[in-house]
Length: 318
Image 1 (cartoon, rainbow, N blue to C red):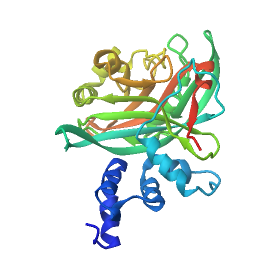
Image 2: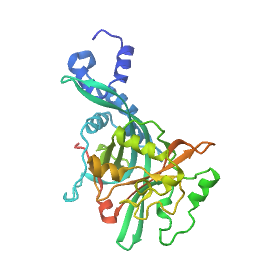
Image 3: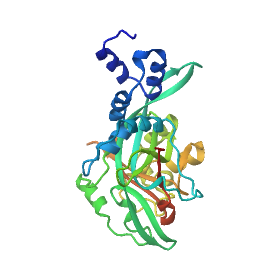
Image 4: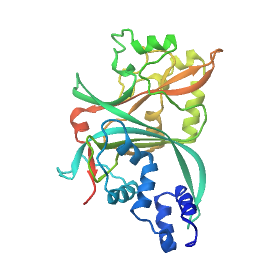
């Protein structure tokens, strides 16, 4: 293998994750990863690519050594605990949402265990909103439409986004198609620095895997009659980050079953807040009125402002 041309070696590395690159490095001197190898890996990774090549002003140059640290950080991400003492190695965060779809299985060596392979559907930026409520000052990490920030069930008024839905145009929608397939999904919210800093670890603040069976049940529910959907407490009832629910909104809006999956499957892996996010999904119908697609319109993750302010990014040691 050490005699393979560089062009072949690059092709092999393109199919490797960080762990496999390390294993190859132990197999032969020709395959030991250097800074350039890690840089190629980080530039194609959706999380590192977003952090340094995303929108806004051009990022400062990134030292080669930081790419290697990035890759090491991707293998063991942590989240700050609320009772941690202040640490200058932490920095205030901005947030991105990642959605992954299970694509296939592979045998993981050396024990022969089955491992799910995930394909990234999207990496979307999120914003933070602040507002006052009867409970005190609240904040929310949001994206997409603002159905969940309009009116309430006791004092409803027309929602501009619902009115837009009736015309077939939905401005500000996240527009992420989930489709009608029944593969498992994984949702992840990651904290990144508000300003470019080097080196830092992408910090997972919420992550949850929805089993294939749970996702399949949701898809089947969305293909029921409009009447059954509109009157379903499981699809449209209040949730932790949307206490008014969707009862006074368009009948084709439903919640993705985060609350139900967390309570029944105990599948929440990481959660930096006391509540769970709410994800609003729009049922797209064909000319005959049948469900043709499921589109993620909106995310809302609400908690007391002080708790959101505690979320910070972990810095890597120099």
